[in-house]
Length: 354
Image (tube, rainbow, N blue to C red; front, side, top):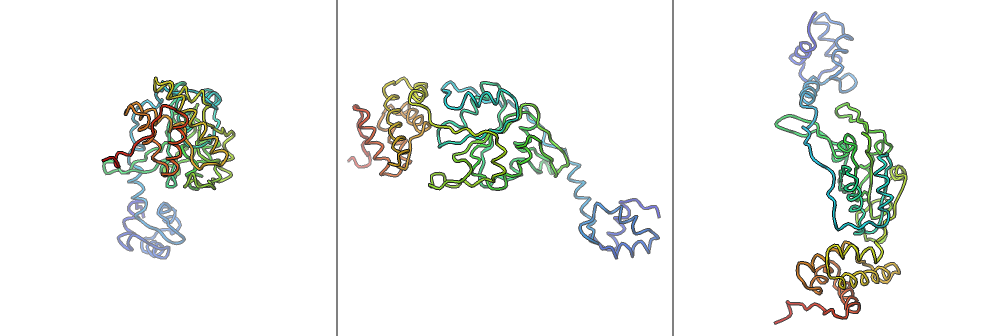
């Protein structure tokens, strides 16, 4: 019998339906004078279990893989813009050396919120003209988000690269921001963190890292979770995952002199900048001594300076930018600033003024 593979499939479907068994194939072979093993080998792509075949699977797979192999690449510049307000401090020089080396050297940066971890990575890449792909990690981030997957485009199923694959192929710096929010689904990056690339099992393609590819992760913790409740949602990361980062930089807040430089880039009011820095320094020392539960970050000081530029009022700028804290903490912060700046006038609650 000289039936083609397609003819065999069609004949079996017409006789037994979409799902068939080995007994049915043997019966069909007896009726058509065929060798069972020969027919079974031809149907290997359709086999779904021991003695079971689904004759619609191959057709669906062919429809999938006949689609374009990937989304059309959109040419774009992924080099971050240089920020004139940036002031280097802390581990910036070491971080820049790692990126400049173009060696694969995964780097973990940990530190309290608002102390410039992400910003320093962006500006190092900007200064070195290096492409940067930033991924904001959440508890929901999974392999599909990172590696990629199939997407429906104009009625066709098309493979779409995720940010990790884009970074691998472009030789870009991959920034995994807030990595300690991730679940164990992040373990899909294990081979990538070893510099070995990744096998895309859904399309049967191996992707090797281009020259210059590197991974940098930022976190508020060291991947051990947060016991004090300050960083709710952070998780204990897999030890094998953490071990794949050769170095960890502990990012501290800038020194008062560096912080004043940062604020002076945004405001010409030297006195106000100095008072804010002194105020934040006192609060941080008290925080580290266990006297208070909240802290004023460098980012928060920048928010205050920008608010001052908008409203032209120190009291209002500090008031609206500390309103995120509970009433007691906010009031304590305002009263402390009142002691630091003799010219400061406590804000008046306009809703109580008749």
